[in-house]
Length: 198
Length: 233
Image 1 (cartoon, each protein chain N blue to C red):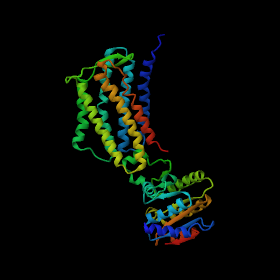
Image 2: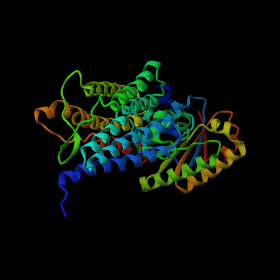
Image 3: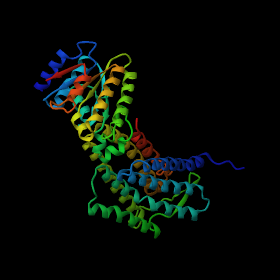
Image 4: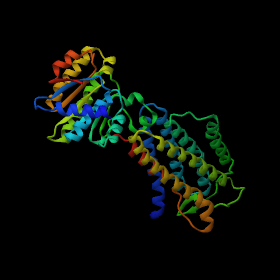
């Protein structure tokens, strides 16, 4: 918990200090769930923002539990879940029908084709803008290393480039979380307004 | 033209309505992904349809002989329902039935279907509420329907116990919330069926208390609440 608090203090000090900051990247060696929690605390608790989480490495239920356990309401967020369809427990398949979107969860069946992920994120972004009216939303993208396992660097690069432009047009604050030796580090640095290293 | 009595009209329309609801939902589930849970649930819906169709036909017939034959037809599907329900719950749990469970799921219905076809279960009908329904029977150890009632009660209680256990152990909150709706439907359907199909002919009718047979129509509750829980939002 101390590490989360430490990360949270750093984020509070650095993030969203300028109106011109719209897309950022964070390079970290910390555990991703801790950084995710610190970011969510900053966005939800401090700035009362609503947002989108891309669930590449962990299912949306993981984030829902993480938020509930820390006094935040998981229903306030939107999830683009590429993980649950892979888990595919019979009860989830029967009750949630992972081929179709839920109220605040959109499922992506195949992450080896980034166009599926792209379409779902745009759909959710439109929903977020309509729901939050004039308030600014956020988009949290992690699991880039995992996406890189299923996609070649060129398509992943195009996907991130396109996503960052759309996020700007939607006035959504986008956070890309990357590993220290991320293959696309140079590209990510050029598309982001600020690059932070923790 | 003779006017159709209101109660007869309602008692005839209800199984037909249940048939339409169950068939539509069965097709909806069948057309989803080819997963075991979906296929077993569709099978459960088709067993309900058999029961609904039989009951609807029984409300239409004019002769006692035909009504008795239809009752035998209905009681081919009813003993299979707990077995299919157990198979569905075990598929949700991602578990394979043990040999003992498999034997109970196959031999139980088979035994009661044989008893039914041999005329040892219930083939006596009587005009109640202006339509043919199951006749009152004796509470005796020589009555096969008593054993059938006991079998259905114990088996359904076991299925519901497993369902509740699965609900309590389920970690996905979204799934858990939806199981609640389905469980509510299971409870309502089971209670109405138990009361009107088993308690009434064995205990209440001989005492002069009559409630119409609504077991097959009550499946609407289970189906509608399950539909509410599985639909995407």
